[in-house]
Image 1: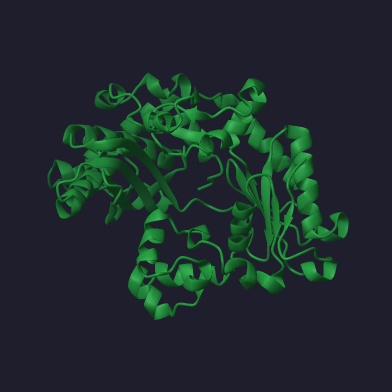
Image 2: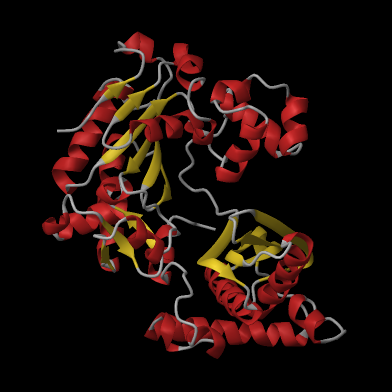
Length: 432
C-alpha cells in the first residue's frame, strides 16, 4: 500500500485543468533494486557503493547517511551500516521496465536519468482519466509489476512537478492544483527549487531568504546582484513557476561532467593531478562516445571546510582528448587554489565539459610548444592523442575499463570516485 497525498484537497476533472505534467521519481533506486534482489536487506541500514555512497536505504538515511558521502564517514554515523557493492546488470532493465509502464499511458516520456522521467499526459486523459488518476494507476502498476516504489509529482510545469515529487517522497503522490500553485510553493524551503544547491541555499539564507515565496518576491535586480544576472532571475522565475519547457523525448546532452570526493584535508598536489587525470579520462571518453567535443572546460574545487569555487575556460577550438582536457583543467585547478585556498586542503575535484559541438576534423596548425599542441584540437600532437584515445576506447569496450589506461590512474584505485559502471547507468539517457 502506498501513501497518496493530494495537495489542497481532491479535484474533479474541471479543476485538474492543465496540470498534465508528471514527474516520476524512483525512490532510493539502486538500494530498492538491491532489496528486491536480496529481501534480507529490507529494513536494514545499508548503502550501495564502494569508496563513496551511491545510494543509501531509507533506514540508513535516518542516521544522516547521504549519497556522495565517503563510506568511512557513513560508518561513523551508522556503525551497523551494511555496504553492498551493487549488481550493475540489474539496474538498467529495472529502469526500463518502469519507463515501459509509463509509455503505456503516453508516448511523451522524457527519461532524464536512470531513475526519473517527465510525462505529458494531456492527450491521455480521455482514455485513462484525470492526471491524478493516471498518477495513482501508474504508481500501482509499477509496484505490482516491478516491486519498485515511485513518488510522483503532478503539476502544470516541469519545474513544479519535480518539486511536487520531492515533497511526495517517499512513496507518495502530490498533485498541485493550478489555481493554488503559489499556496503550495511559497512555504517550501528554497532548496527545493531546481538548480539551487547547498551553497546557494546558504548564500540566500545570509540575506534572509529561506522559502520559495521569499525568493519569488524579490525584485529581479536584487537577486541578479546576489547570484548574477543569469542565474538569479532564472531561479526567481522558477520560484514563481515560470517554466516554458515542454516534455522532450529526443533532447541532446548539453554538458558532461565527473567528480571525485576524497574527503579530509588533502594537500598532496601529485594526488590532485592523478584524480584530475582520471576525471578527464572519464569525461573525454563520454564525449568521444557521443562524437562530441567541448568548447568550455570547468573545474570545481571544494576545500576541506566544504567551501567551493569554480573556474572555467572557453577554448578557441573544441576538445575531446584526455590530455587536452586534463591540461586545461589542471591550469584552472591551480588558479582556483592560488586565488582561494587560503591554506585549506582539498576534499573534492570535478571537471565539466560544456558548449558541446560535433567532433569534426580540424585544420592542421603550427606547433607553438607541447601544452599548446595538446589543448589545440588541430595540432599534430593533439590529433595523435585523439587517435590514441580512440584506440583505448576500443580496447575498453572489448575487455573492460580496467584493461588499459594511464599508469598513474590505474595504480591509484577508485580515488573516491563513483564506479564507471554506475556513471554509465546514470548517463544512459544522454543522447548527445
